[in-house]
Image 1 (cartoon, rainbow, N blue to C red):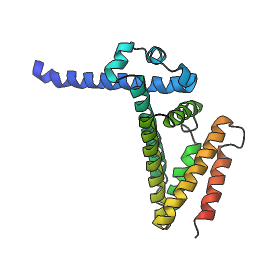
Image 2: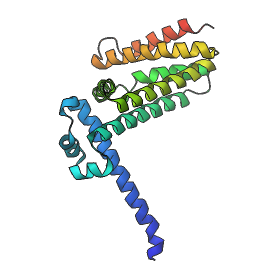
Image 3: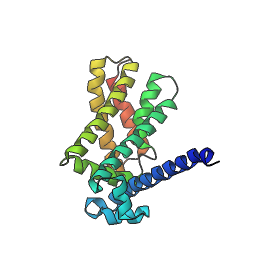
Image 4: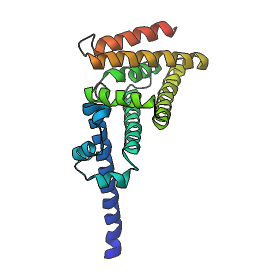
Amino acid sequence: MYNNMQPVRQAFTRESADARRAALLGAAAACLAELGLAGTNVRAICARAGVSPGLLRHYFAGIDDLIAATYEATSDRMDAIFADAVAGAGDDPRARLSAYLGASFRPPVTDPELLGAWTAFWALARSDARMAAIHAGSYAGYRARLGELLVACEVSPADAARLAIMLTAMVDGLWLELSLDAASFGAEAAVAMVEEAVGALIKP
């Protein structure tokens, strides 16, 4: 009987550990969004997650390790959102490209809390080598996937790499402005501007 129950106990323990770790990641992101870098510390994160400081140190080497893991988790979450958008667009290459770019102007990417966390990550990437590496990897992955979608639209690989840089910068700029002031031009206008740029850059 004991042996039969043991795998269930192990699975429960593993799931609980994953949930606690996820709670710390979520709390770190929320603190960065609400309190900024200056207000994000072990006490604030643990209070929001409802755990003791000792538990944070059980899962992470320290707050720097936690924030780096939070950046990675946030990047992975965005990747999944973009991938889902493409998958839901069907088989048409142009529709898939539009879905990938347009997802940046749809919830949950337009969540105001994401702006606070993301700007904190950007600030840290300027001075912290580990955060800079995460940033570089995240953006390289985004541009690579964008390049693949452009190639599927019959853009040459060399041109696709160049256009991916241009379109990424455009999307980032529009997303930032929209996040700072949602009434400035609106999500649909942002999508339309990106579509106009794509139409000009990709010749039929």
